[in-house]
Image (tube, rainbow over all chains, first blue to last red):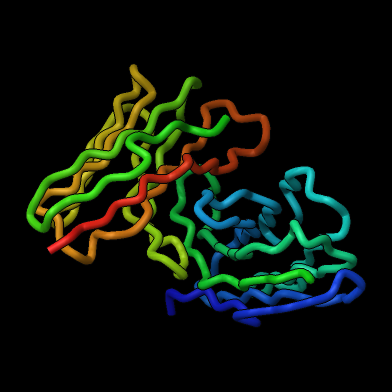
Length: 114
Length: 113
């Protein structure tokens, strides 16, 4: 199984809502990532979990809260988002070594904040 | 430190060759190439590591010039399926930020019949 799955595929939420994005992989990978991608722009790294511990937080606003319940799951909790947070949110995983390993991307969650 | 990709966009006829460049102003540990089709996730193509190397599979290959901190992706005899946006991602040498992967701005490629 070489797949990273993400749910939901699409999400529309108001600025006062609380929602969560979910990412799952069963490849035994020990590093997992959240990226944000705006239209016609490259993915921008938000968070990195290595061995279930948060290792990188790229100065992301606190309205985004990541969680790694176990080595296969990665969540992104959303609260009080702004319209400018609308984007494609990509999850990725890699075997371990961040700088040399291939990152496998999920299909993404397209988020619209009204 | 975002790497710089060139060109930003290109249009090819099926069967033509193309080169996409990726440059960094800082010393690189590795260069990663991905292709993303519209509405889909980025798909891994290849990784090149410090020391300078070349890799390839099928008609897509890449090189990494460590001295110039530059990588090039070569598309030979392009096919319609090669259309998409190509991103290079770089990991800096001695990156105190934990060896994060930073993507270039992308090169949008359209292959026409």
